[in-house]
View 1 (cartoon, rainbow, N blue to C red):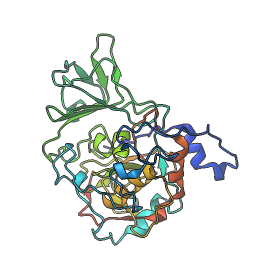
View 2 (view 1 turned 90 degrees about the vertical axis):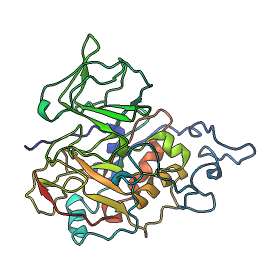
View 3 (view 1 turned 180 degrees about the vertical axis):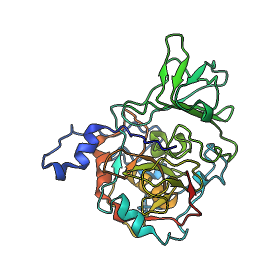
Length: 347
């Protein structure tokens, strides 16, 4: 089975990231003073970027070192691949070829914004009413309902239509792809999966999920609350221009067009920001994200459906600054390297 996914992205961010090629100038409103800072300590020097890093995970005296080293974030066990640091893991022998395939000169793009584009999610309380869910494309590879999806659960803008529901109390994650709500409150979707957040269970081999790689979506998105706290203790996810018809652990599914074993990355490939890359010139919020990319990396999880790669996933929030997110475009594919992986499984 071959399937291609198309990532939705804020048009303003993508155009700005490609502004040089388009030959036009992209303007944005003057950014606000920054998100509200409920953890700023009395007497701290709250600058224009919204507050001192001293009250957050980043050490104000260092451009990179966090003051917290815990990785038990409640989303999968601490020994999960998502929660495992890889900053000292060996580089894959084919790293340069993979990076060239994805685009060594391509810019890192934040595929979310303050206007609502990106991958929204909802956290539900214990006892949330479960509703029926029907699957019309891949019912045999989908976990049957009911799912605890609220009436007003946010649906991702664009053709992907992801719905992500987190039940931390009971330890479950529910995810849908191409989802829509019916008039009676039930839902329908192309396919879906539920994940036990207290285990490291994977999908059956060659089964899809709500993501092309057969992996969960929610653990890999940049979330505003974590950035505000100053510490992301898990890997992220991103989409690339094209992938091969194979996958590597922890992925379980491929959705590529390239030959197996080619230079196109397999689904589940893990990429990290090189240690040598200087991130001190970025705002503290962007440093939180970039430090996570150095320590935990990001998984190839989807195809963009375009010639572009490096679409980093995140959740929308009104307190993001589009102008600040655009600064991630100063980094390119050549600033990353591929972490060594195991055998490639054919789809």
